[in-house]
Length: 104
Image (cartoon, rainbow, N blue to C red):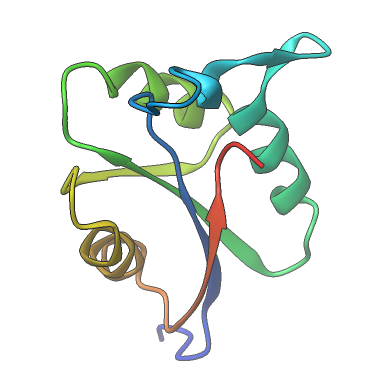
């Protein structure tokens, strides 16, 4: 039976920042900033973590970050972040979602 109260964090990350390009991949203490966010969220008990990235060729590198950290990865709309979040939550079967920035 599927748990109807699944809670998850959908991390939004992209490499196309105009102010600081590729900041989601910036190394901090030997790990990407997105990797640090994933690791922190995985420490929360009962929280499903999903990395949501744009479905562009440039952002495919972020899919590898998510897979290396053992989280589900969803690729969706580059321009519609809300749609990407919703579809990532549906992809993971989440009922309740917290949206998290992947470079904070």
